[in-house]
Amino acid sequence: MQMQSQVALITGAASGIGQATAEVLARYGASVMLADSNREYGETVAAQIRQVGGRAHFVCTDVSDTSSVRQAVQLIREVFADAPIGLLVNAAGVLRHGYLPELAEADWDLSLDVNLRGTFLCCQAVLPLMLEQRRGVIVNISSSGARGCPGRYPAYVAAKTGVLGLTLAMANAFREKQQPISIFALCPDKVDTPMGEQAFRDFRGYAPSLSDRSRMLVSNQIAQIILRLMEPEWAIASGSIIDLKVV
Image 1 (cartoon, rainbow, N blue to C red):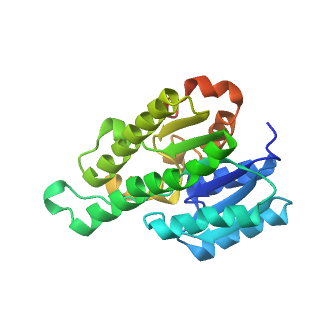
Image 2: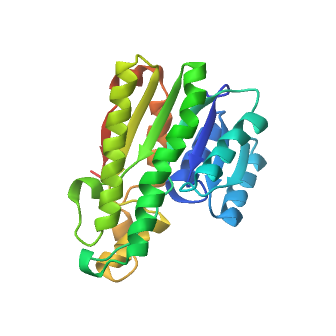
């Protein structure tokens, strides 16, 4: 699939799923706007994409802050004025663990702010552009945690479950208003990313071995699925929640 006429905004793009998605989309010709709070890593990823001939720009973004998100979206118009935004990938996320009685209020707030509020704010900021051009795809990264609801991650589970509800509500709204926007939620299981390793350490108390990593998803696999969701044929599946696990 070629994406030369598309712009993609990817949050959490400095590492993990967001980084892999930016690299894959750029390889297929998309112009990618990388949004992340980690300036050092984000600028490095954008530079690496440009070094191999891709179009990439980094913007330091706090997805939980309305003005920061709006500035990132406005920058798309300025940097990639020759192409419309065709894809939003909400991959920014944080993971805080602790059973509810011991969970710090600050960890609860951060989890909801980044994982759920951030998804909401980015969707809200990008939708006017997609509706104006009458096309677009949104992919929200939820988690298998929203399905299995592990007890030591109440804040993360609450936020990622909220992402699923938001995705379904938006899909229904697009259908009711006959708006040509597609939206999907992905629920990856264990992923070999910095956050995935953190979760593994929380549960097991040690870093994953090579054998453990062989039973984990790879970011590039998820990025390839996101690429496929850009195909027009997937529009009829808008609202789908896709579970991703190693077989």
